[in-house]
Image (cartoon, rainbow, N blue to C red; front, side, top):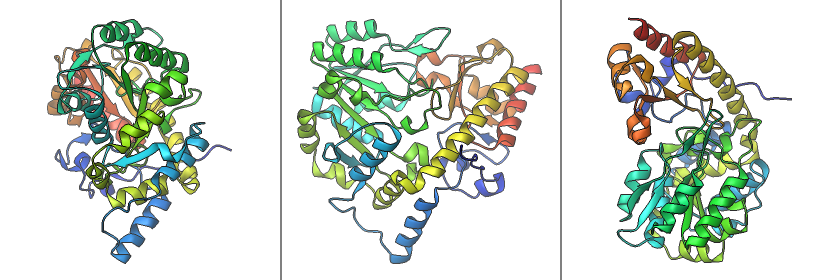
Length: 386
């Protein structure tokens, strides 16, 4: 039997939060920009954190916190991934993990393939590691988005040394199929390059789509690949600082073991506790309820766009709670989020930050109550008619 959808917290409750989503703008703005969700925590997470506060358990993260074992069990149950916990290390957040791996696998000045439009910190992460961004845009078709394998091959043949993969992709919500991921790995292996896969949205894949973890897509993937992930997006834990770095093979394990000890020490103790609780079987019913709520919200967004912004172009995402919407037909400029914020009092994420392909686009977070999503799109629709 399917799980009942989670109910989002009320705006009155949400405006008591102190996170970026609820403190960046004044109360007359509806915030649907940053990737925070509007639901309460999974009960297992609330319980473990409350008990830690009672005990004053706020010290350093232990050397074996159990998060690798917890994720391996979760990956087996939810992702069909038979993962050895010995392949897992931990750090503060996904971007931190990516930059530390990049520092080990590229040299200063090396080019790194980034598939635009993409999560804006990808650009900064490459630069922080001493690399140079090489953009290979996704291919856009009537059916969806896909990796430009020929473009990646050309970039690697031209000297790029690594590929940053987003699987599922942010902002398009694309779940890359197994054959494409396997082909990407083979291209990288022939070029002597590595692939680092950001899989933070993986547990939020919507049926009937099936997520293939990059490292399971084929033998080449295990030889060239790393994955970096966290419970932070699915379970709304970004402020607690815990992410996982996963090695595809013995060679990659050696690279992760060679990282400075400080990389693991950056992991927050509350982050570890929360991630372990999130990945436990006890939290599975909560996750099923979240997926049901997101499915309803995604469908509602489609109806709202068709009614109030009929000239908007979008494809419902295969995974996650972020919608990539082209509103260029309304003439609100290259960065329409600015006009929408100023005149409709709705905060969407700025499309151009995701790359040149984001001109005329906004990213909408639909992990919110139906009435909030409805009011937000109605406000923007009224702007379109003014």
